[in-house]
Length: 210
Length: 166
Length: 150
Image (cartoon, rainbow over all chains, first blue to last red; front, side, top):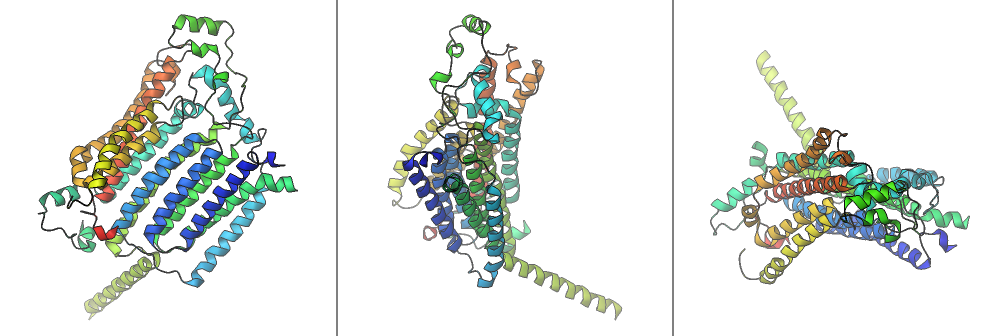
């Protein structure tokens, strides 16, 4: 019976543990109002889901999630939080009703749709018996690279990855165009005397004019 | 029935997580909290996608030595030996000894995560600009400021019109 | 930085940052045989810079790695990636067809290996440059993080 789960009984318990942790973190984020706590918990969520990725054999994705989700995006979110606000306003109880109904309805529909999905870990499902298996079989002859993920990423689907790289570059450019390249802070710090330690006044107006 | 529940419970748990993060993105008026909800939603979608590619008894898609037959071992030992091995019946489609999970979802989600953080930071940059202009990052306050400004502009236009006609 | 109360942080960071950078390059060049790759390595390099900025201040970081450099790095990364595609075109193959780089028959891997390594270097430059640019843009808006903000 337990064989149909992802692994043995022990693995099933670990699955339940990780998914339970994800649930607790997500519910905490939904309830909290302190933005610092929310940002930190989103990093925790990424870290736990990185562990889940390792559990479902996606070592590369787990690595990426740990580096990007828990490291980079937490740093970026913290930087943005410092520039904006520390706490969120309390939500009105009536406001919660609409989203709750929408999410419940969507969830029920998705679960109804998931009934037709192949069983978890099914090797003969259309998704797993198709091109993915072919990549595994022809990879060693074509590439001579043991890591199939790298060879699919860089070679079989190299065009895809070129697009993704361009998107990352464009996003960096967009952020720099929106916020400036950071030279403003460099100039400010350079001309600032050590006495003036306090932060400059909230720049509501001059940022507006810029 | 019991087997069915066991094989699908993982999907349902992930759908539940998806709905919680969707709820965060929907209900939060604070724009940063909303973006955190969106990024959780994206992470959960990646979880779902990668979980679909798991194969029971499989291992990570990094080939084990048993699946790397001789023709690759001649790497660097000289192209002549390699060519000989290929000519001696090198087969493109190999039969695998070990079971590996599907590598395709991993590739797609790997790039999606990196692009996700890039787009997240574009959203955050927009929020920082909104804060600088409006002085708040609550969506309803921003809306209120917008309505106020529009009303003030309209009143100003009307008074100017009156002055012109008078 | 003012005061001495960040000394432990500074000493530990000084030890850790070179290790983080070396680890990034390990991940980059070991990506073909184990988990890892250019996307992860690029982010790890950016994270090492962020750690440096958090401990030693943004100004010192910008002196070490100037903003124009990270901007240029991101663009150069995409150019390297696209350039490999044109190299393959000039060698008589399709766009990004690494097999054609050295005109090898199927089953030989030098072209594939060279192509994968070069585009991974391109991705490394693009991702680390873009991520550092994003961090500079966001962090450049605050002059300094006040202690009560922690």
